[in-house]
Image (cartoon, rainbow, N blue to C red; front, side, top):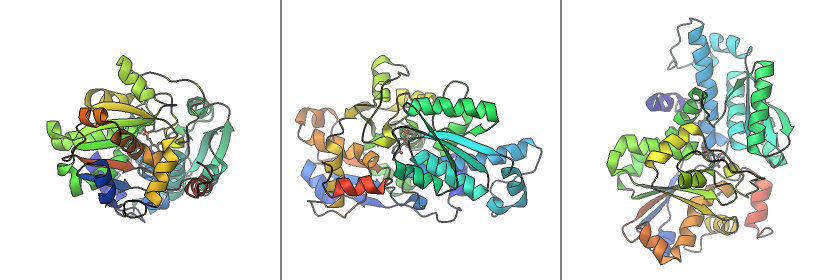
Length: 368
Ligand SMILES: Cc1ncc(COP(=O)(O)O)c(C=O)c1O
């Protein structure tokens, strides 16, 4: 499944490996051997790793429908995206999902690429900038009251009424195939990392929303390196810490409330069941961070005081780095996680300026 996703996505127009940047100055400042930053800010022009998941799931769903109709489909066919069979089917299909922004952008882009209709549900907290970015791919928008999880339910109810296909990045009992495709898409990113530096990493810091990204990366490292895989730390906003809470009770836990963290992509209150099953067995540690350190960390990446390259990192991208910077002044945490002179840490920089106005406000210091 992983190799298939890789072979297919690498042939999409605009595919290019995203940069893996060594932050040598920062590594010296925090006292570790290496800090690697996987910069997803330019992925397919959608500005986040999410471009890989939702769009790939839309593609796979159409292929599955064709196959179920008895059509002989070779998903590796070079011009499959523009084939008449796919176009004829696509115009009869409506795809839908709820999103905090980035997943919906990916689904909308996939639908545009394949020519199917797309309806995206946004909760109250999703900014107008993020809405515009989704509309730019031709999707219809439905605004709904409440938080992310409310919008997930709303989208699912309407999908049942209007016969739409839900392409969610989160899975629940009885809904696993599509989120599995989404996660397979994400492994294109982990594949690029593993090919370059996988064997030398001691730690992977990955941020959690519903956990799909963390689980996809962890599963990929696990399959590649087995027990020799790096230590996995999952980091969430303290206002939306459903994975952390799940780890405390040893089962999927729901966090209620507005989940109003600045890290919009991570504002999720319920773990993906599929993802949780992987993280429960394979993640080594879970941590939370407050919003307070996020703007500062974004500015530090944009203008490094340590002489490192300038990086465009969005609010959800910096969770791992914000944790590392906070931990650096707490020797007991550094010791317990073995973050020492031998540590080679990967930070998943999952997005760029996905809300450009907010990004500018933060970088210019207008928003502390
Ligand atoms: C930029 C960004 N980073 C990380 C995540 C977390 O991914 P997941 O919800 O699969 O845990 C998201 C989710 O939307 C995101 O948009």
